[in-house]
Amino acid sequence: MSSDDAYGSFLEQANQDTGASNVSTTSKNTTTKAVDTDVPVRLQKVEQYYTSEADEPFEPVSLKWGGNNMPSENEFAELIGHDSDVSTISTKEFDPQGQYQDVLQAVEEAGDGKSRVFRAIHGKTRIEYYVVGLDKEHERVVGVKALAVES
Image 1 (cartoon, rainbow, N blue to C red):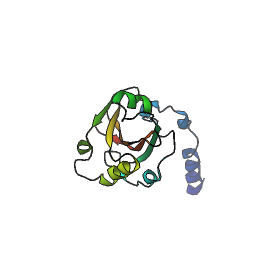
Image 2 (image 1 turned 45 degrees about the vertical axis):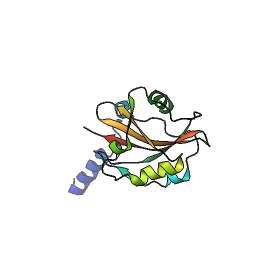
Image 3 (image 1 turned 90 degrees about the horizontal axis):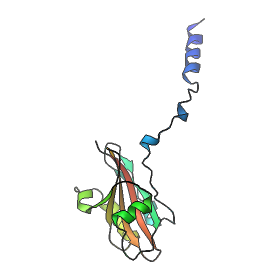
């Protein structure tokens, strides 16, 4: 057998389906609900990443909400379908170096001119940050979210 044949055999074996795609990855699942109504165009244009150990992009958020005020932490947890800790932090805590001012501005323009940051904890190292505002006219909470890995 020539070395080319041996190499070809090696490649065929390496590319065979091992069934690994059927492995459950529920331990890494940090998905919460983010969109159940139309997303404002301004938020679709946000192209920035949240800097953490994962450097994930900001994704649009648009959730139906009939309240006249921003949801409480418990109401927001229900809204996104999260069954664990949700807390609020100030925009200064979220953006101490001022690197997400464009994100905050986009959220404020899409909503009522104010923004609030919710922090949804997933296990020991994964956190989703929701930067949202209230759009009373369309009865929704709008904004962006990003996944952070903090160990």
